[in-house]
Image (cartoon, rainbow over all chains, first blue to last red; front, side, top):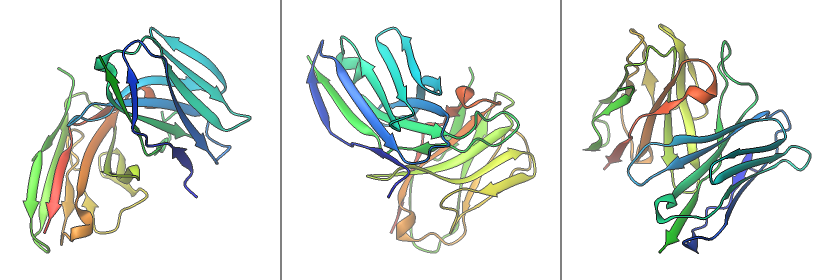
Length: 115
Length: 112
């Protein structure tokens, strides 16, 4: 069993829809949770970074962490064609800093938002 | 402009022919990593480095070597490439927290 599971999709939605992307994990030591966005032929870029349980909002994006269920989500409101990309969840036991802070990634979900 | 660069971006080679993929960052970052990305498997870490001359294995180090002689450069070496190393490779760097991590644009490698 993978440490982090993510539905690869693909997911296709109309413009303006609310998108929900999810990951489950098995390692209860994970405390730092990230969402990366990867456009075609580009490297991943950090979209959201959260610590422990709770919600974090940034514009149209909301990251949600439920540590009791070992479940994280990314919601995209009013989705746009420019949101079409692969979304990767990633997790870490520690924040980095003076220790390495190894990242464990999900498989990625391919999202297409059509006009 | 702050960036991580990789070269080459695309490479086709044959089994057994040694190759090096270069990675360079201009942000004075201490931490650098190499990942490979394969369909259905996501990103998996190959090697990482916490500073000059300090490197360690990630999850899938077999068949790869790295070196960190200068802070800005972290080359990935495939001494004897095999077809199962056909993949998309990413270099990444960060200063401290995961929040500062930057990825390079990727190198697509095909080993025949």
